[in-house]
Amino acid sequence: MLSHLPKHADPRLLVGIETADDAGVYRLTDDLALVQTVDLFPPVVDDAYWFGAIAAANALSDVYAMGGKPLTALNIAGWPRDLDMDLLGEVLRGAADKLHEAGTTLVGGHSWEDEEPKFGLSVTGLIHPQRIVTNAGAEVGDALVLTKPLGMGVITTGAKNELAEPEALEEAMRIMAGLNAGAAEAMLAVGVHAATDVTGFGLLGHLREMTRGSGAGADLRAAAIPVLPEARRLAALGMIPGGSQRNLEALRADVAFGALSEVDQQLLADAQTSGGLLIAVAPHKLAELLERLQTAGTPVHSHIGEITAPREPSIQVLATPQQG
Ligand code: CO
Ligand code: CO
Image 1 (tube, rainbow, N blue to C red):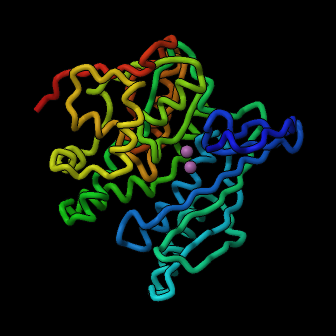
Image 2 (image 1 turned 135 degrees about the vertical axis):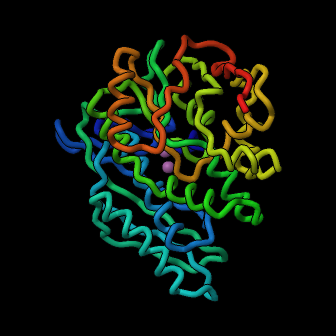
Image 3 (image 1 turned 90 degrees about the vertical axis):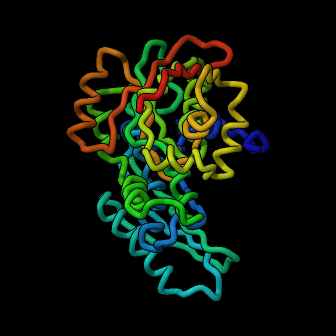
């Protein structure tokens, strides 16, 4: 689809659409560049306030994933004529609280009449042109680190079918609404080779973008990958979102799953509305990164695998028997 777009040879465009990266980066001066991104989606949870907070955390995340600092934001909202406007007010309040937490200023927005509600934001940030972290810089031998557990798509689908435990849903909402700011600060302090945030394509889909962009492969250790326990329970009941099923189908040619169970395969491909950062770091910096992530209080700080030389299929999941 993106191949239909014209390619402009503007030397100030530092990160464009070629590497399927999280945000675009445009150089203003030798030591200053703009990071720009836009994201919107239909409600992922029933609670309007949480929906707004999660949408904002997700939109901000693409700036954090590149190592940028979010500066300003614009709201974008589609809203049905017959739906309570106070609910939209709650969505905006949830988003505003997140922007405040991020130190980001709301400068405006746009809304239109739509058949179903949609909400998101366009975020603009600043970054040093020499300190951009893309998804395309991973090197052979790098350790892969993840900062939020998987399973949010399964849990929100379970909640829509009234099968999710309320406490587990609340925990998932808190995790989704959590900013990736601390994770980004930690990776910038340590210096890493590559990063991306795990969102709609799931862990495996975003890892594939990273291996493709970096010309590499990857090994994942299934037992080291954090998954919310409620997600494993609900996945076994078949609560797999359509998007996650499509992710897995689209990944089959690029991933060797070995003996991994079908449910675990689904969980690794589960679409995360607002997941954590997936970071590739040189092995001698791994311990420092994990320590800084722990200090930053990220939901998890898990060493889940390694970047390898390029190969077919590019990603290999090493399955070990599940305990318990
Ligand atoms: Co992203
Ligand atoms: Co995005």
